[in-house]
Image (cartoon, rainbow, N blue to C red):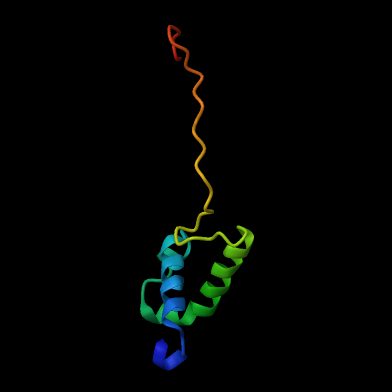
Length: 81
């Protein structure tokens, strides 16, 4: 892909990670040939996901946001059912 298609190594790495963390693409991109065939589509979807999350797309296809602590309604001395 680097020699034949003139792709950047970092772009290839990011697209592979995106494809393997996306539920649809991870079962559809199982060979280098399929990766080459679908590269432009994958790159576009990856960049779209990045824009939709405010530029905070990460390799796990999730938004980078702090985890909020779960609040418990448990009070000592009372049943928790």
